[in-house]
Image (cartoon, rainbow over the protein chains, first blue to last red):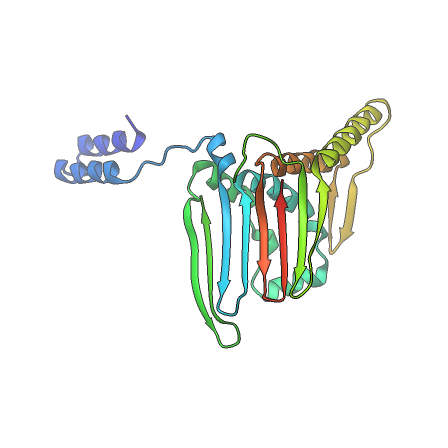
Amino acid sequence: MSNERMKILEMIQEGKITPAEGMELLNAIDESPIKEKVTSSQIADRFLRIRVTGDKVKKANVNIPLSMLKVASKFMAMSSGFIPKEAREEMERKGIDITKLDIEELTSLIDQGIVDGKIVDVDVDDPKEGKVQVEIYVD
Amino acid sequence: MLTKTRKSFFMVLKIGMKGRKGFPIPIPLNVAQITLDSVADLLWFWESLMRPFKSITNKGDNYKTQIPLRELFSQSRALIHELRRHGRWRMVEVDDGKTKVYIEFY
């Protein structure tokens, strides 16, 4: 029996919640989708895909294997100290703080299969470039 | 992805410009992998007999970053291994109307 179920039953026993409320909580747990842990072989076959399409015949497609992201994250962790000061300041001005990037968390999310499906889907109407669509998804 | 069972042997960088014939730049990945493996073995052998090589160090901006050589080689090997395992696939395709750039693995 899962931990959440045990806690709910304990709360009913201690009188902290009524049986009806406990039943609702148990049903809510049952309804939430259970994500099975993705196996490493499933991760190995998955790709992070980035699609950028624009009105003016501009497009970019990038496919990155998820397993490669994990390896590349170690490189990023090693090499973040070598970014020149000027580049880092420019990034900070645009709101990107390299030191706060948690690559380990991203890779653990990938391991748990939480990063799945469409991650980003943005449509932008730029006066110069026209309509630009950006899609980032995992499949 | 047409073939997933065999490893990729080449990374091909293709650059094409509008009105001109493009040119491919093939990079043999198996050679790169064998080279890295050999250098890593040599490094291990050397460090077993002598003292370890100094790490690559960057001192600046009030902090110091050190990357051990062995770790650098290990990650490079892992990266090439990952790049090779998917058979034939296209990693990057960029087309801005005038220039096309592809990075493909065969």
